[in-house]
Amino acid sequence: MQKRILYHIAFWVAYVLFKSYLNFESLIYSRPKENVFYLFFLATGIQSLYLIAKIPLVYTVFYITDQFLSRKWKIIKSIILTSLTFLLSIIIFLFLSSFIQQYIMKRPMENENFFSVPSFFYAFFILAFTCGIALALKLMRQHIKARETEQEMTKKRLETELRFLKAQTNPHFLFNTLNNIYGLARKKSDDTAEVVMKLSKLLRFMLYETNKPYIAVEDELKVIENYIELEKIRYNERLKINYTALIDNPTSPIAPLILLPFVENAFKHGAGESMYESFIKVEVRLENSSLYFNVENSKPDETALEITEKIGLSNVRRQLELMYPAHNLSIINKPTTFSIVLNLNLSSHAKI
Image (cartoon, rainbow, N blue to C red; front, side, top):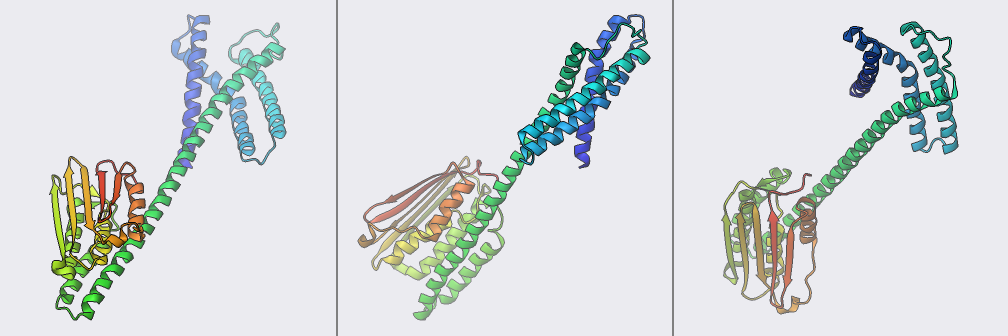
């Protein structure tokens, strides 16, 4: 509120100084022998007096405009009240002009008629100019404020949606991993304890790191490596895994868990649905903030025509749309292989 008042005071001070400068030029021409500082002070005093007519007019028009734009008043009522306000302001303006000329400028008024038709039109244009400038600035400020409010609401909506997507992804990952542990426990595998330990590390990461908007790309890759090691225990020799990573800047920021769902999907719908030997290939390259990510997995023939996008992939798709609008994601579904190719520019992520 205090900032708004200062803006209004600054406007009127700037307006008075501008009009005083224009009036000062004419005073110098008509009174060349007078002191320039006195003339400028005189011009400022005259323009300040005119504020008696201008300020009530401007703020009354502001109020009428607000009522009309908020649909509280009809157009006829707004026009009538604006006209009456202008008429009253013109009369006050002309009285002030008469007073200024007679008592401040000391001019004889015998032959002057300040209430003639030309004087009314002159006063109208002066007041309309002042009111128009003020109203234009007000509407422009309201437009900027409305745009900022809309952007803030959009940002909050996207933040809420992103938190919801992450909240869905984490339990989804946990559910799949617990199924793996359940399978190992039923077999009474000696690897069960090691799997639980690796899972606890992953959960610790999800608990403390995924709430951040961005993490270092090396941390995201560590999660992928830990997940791959966890899955290796489950599949033993039946699954061949080829993982390569070439990173020029390990500290580049990336949205957490934006890559892991693709790797998880490869295990679940590749090796997880095959009774025979299978493979998964994961390739990561980062150069000059340009990330190339490729995951390819084998799949049994019977799933060649049926790839269903579950929670993990659909969520990560939406997260990519929100965080990296310019991303490029290709899904290649062949009879015996399924692969995704993702290209991200890590330096041009969205501000959410």
